[in-house]
Length: 222
Picture 1 (cartoon, one colour):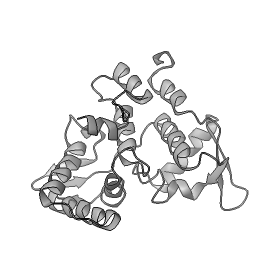
Picture 2: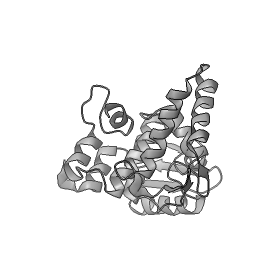
Picture 3: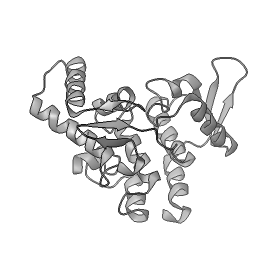
């Protein structure tokens, strides 16, 4: 459980609650609100962690609407990822149990099942199209993503947010839906987008994830 809580952004390496963990446990102790589950999904899936690297790879390459997932297929994907990135082989028992954890996370109510990613079928799971996350969830994720990848930059290319290492795929959002969410963030003065000429530039105007978390859970939560 501590390893899962760490990957989901709820605790840090010293097993202390993170700012997200503190607010979530206080406002949503059962961790069942969509916003909480979306942020847990984000932290598990972010390319920079704290979730395991293979989780990001599975989310952007396998957790796509219409795909049929099996334990055997996810087991093979995890094994292949570790071999490619770390040059070592894991036993089938290890990768199999990890695949069970991944599939269970998105299919069971005591995981992130309320997000509706997976529909369990006989011997497999069908990936469903989910509802878009709340805009404030995207604000938290964008601030965290920016701090981790672009902390020294005033602006980044819009395409950097929509590529394989960006946010759109993590949240299972089409380009149209993601750009619509960015327009909402621009309207709220959280970001600004300059579209004078390609590549279009995104400026982050409010870069503190904790402030967005406070708004998400109520300003009196901190």
